[in-house]
Image (cartoon, rainbow, N blue to C red; front, side, top):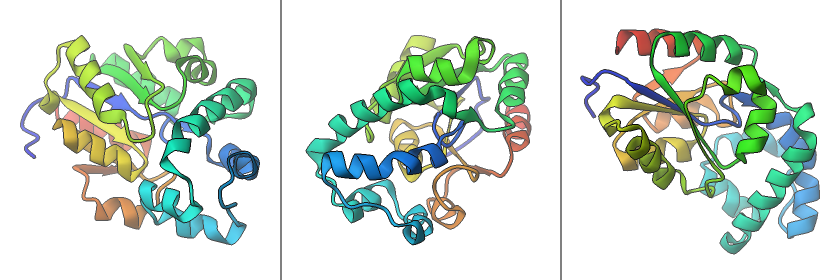
Length: 215
């Protein structure tokens, strides 16, 4: 897609993009596997799964699709109780502050709950986000993206969606937005680059540079 239009809106994923929740999730995955009766993840399988798409991971673990909403609700409750254990990635505060200073609008689209995101962000950083669209289903980000664009009066070509998984790229493309992938989250670099997102970010500073160059 063309990136001739200036970027007026950046939509962030949360877990694995702004918040460093990967280790916490691995600490509860065995409990989830017992509760919802799917395959447990062995330590030597983690890197292999990082090279699989979201759908491939679900298939590998043997999770029935009808269980996904139940698992998502349970995880949201767990995060709510353990938000103090989850921190932002080191560059997140500076990224949000400096991005807001440029005048670009910022939105958050995540399967996590808004209350959880606000707890982990803290009031200062949460205040820099102009629109929250939370609680999306695992593969339900595209409708949330459309809602954000409509509410904020921004065309798809003027928005950049940033995430750390293959499904984030798929959802952005479905809506017609630019897709950016961060390399510090869940999915492996090789997997994300194979998806050919519009831009790949190795550091939060790269996001600031890209937005500045497309303003």
